[in-house]
Length: 265
Ligand SMILES: Cc1cc2nc3c(=O)[nH]c(=O)nc-3n(C[C@H](O)[C@H](O)[C@H](O)COP(=O)(O)OP(=O)(O)OC[C@H]3O[C@@H](n4cnc5c(N)ncnc54)[C@H](O)[C@@H]3O)c2cc1C
Image (cartoon, rainbow, N blue to C red; front, top):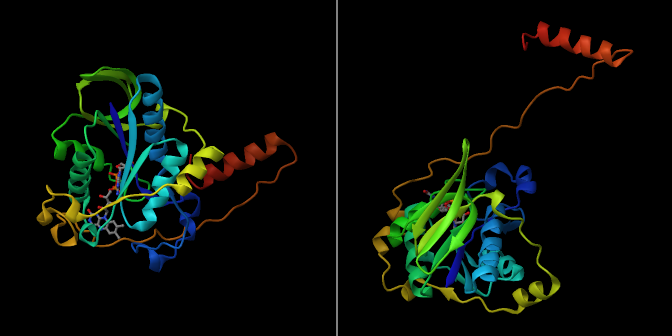
């Protein structure tokens, strides 16, 4: 069995406040880029599936050469094979174009049983890649997977966490699953893993390497969805006031008076 994880390099959310307004939407946001936090759960799940059911693991990302950092993190965690999809022809693709490239590359990487994605990326945030990929490959898709209950040669049985409870779903393999954060606790890479990741070669798959690629579906010119504007929200304004009072009860009473006066309650 082969478990393939799709990962994306995204900005470190701790540093998002530092992105300068003029850099929003550019390729270089001027902040540290890391493995999309949601994708750590997908990487961890692939590793746990390998431990439970045996098989091979691979990770794939579409992006610039910098995206290798996302692959490195996945390899440091324990993933065996890693592929970077990078070509100027892919630049500016929308989600449909991105999933088309990923689907062609996954076909090339080989016989796969399960493709795992994160729930969403912390920058694009569309959650479109999982369902788009399944559509491109013509395989089933299950979102918000909170537990993989069982895996056979033919099917995977999963639990999905819903607002009103849990749903158990069984789908035929191969399939694409997007995982939620309830599914596991991602491991930290150990020293050996980090060393392996830093020494490993990361093959680059280009447009010419993908015979099934429909060039009319990829790149900026083919994008059906255009991001016409992207900007930072205005900085929040507000004032902080400490409520004085001799006792906690006095402070609570003063706070209640204030909230009533401001018509908050
Ligand atoms: C400079 C720039 C301009 C762009 N312009 C446009 C535009 O005009 N129109 C438009 O529609 N989009 C545009 N995009 C967005 C691009 O199409 C998306 O980044 C891509 O489709 C992924 O969508 P998402 O980030 O919403 O991921 P989601 O769908 O939220 O991600 C879900 C999961 O899919 C996987 N995944 C996501 N991205 C990748 C990837 N690259 N490689 C492998 N796996 C991945 C991860 O597991 C992730 O957790 C632009 C991006 C950049 C950087």
